[in-house]
Length: 244
Image 1 (cartoon, rainbow, N blue to C red):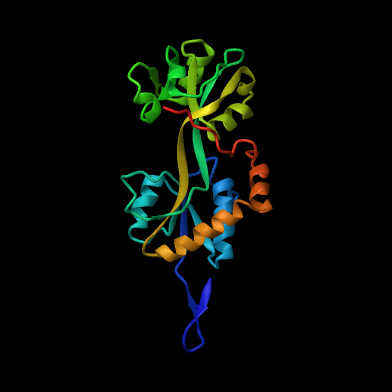
Image 2: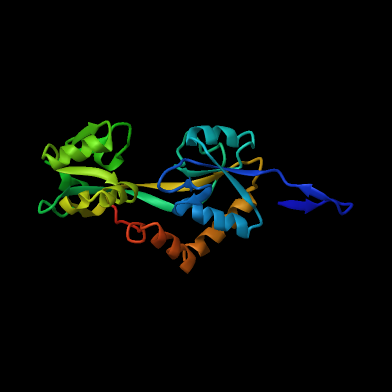
């Protein structure tokens, strides 16, 4: 996108490079942005006068390149303490809740963490489940992959498995596996997914304005259309959290 110089000539603005991780939320399909996160971001940036260029890049590399301004924005970012000072962050586009899944006909009510006592709980290695981990009497079994965790549940080696309430459930539903499972009505944790903006390309005031636009957009029919087009309208919601 070009701008006028003082003498009336054209001056090209630096490319606004947006890194995408290539997952359910943000990917390229035939060179076009696809996924609820990146489709919403694309709309908001263009409405603000920015013509973004997209590149596939691992999130850790994108965060590093935000510091130099080579990358203007990174997508589907979890704002951990380790990176909180590295960029400006948007409000969450979506929140990925950690939901408890059981086999059909083996569901039970969970309103507080102690309701899981005595259950064998499957979780992923390297993931944190603070509400469960704080209770020393919980049986939390760790698995290397979602596939291993799913097999353990299906074969009765665990009573409950903790999965991502959007991305995992969408995948299981697409594969027909959800017909054998049920999701409990409460979640055991939540992970916000945000956009990270380079401090060399964005100001805090522009991020504030972006967040206001994002909040309005998420109340619009256009956001609902994006959710429905991606098959996620019933999964993007606020799950109640269990209490301690």
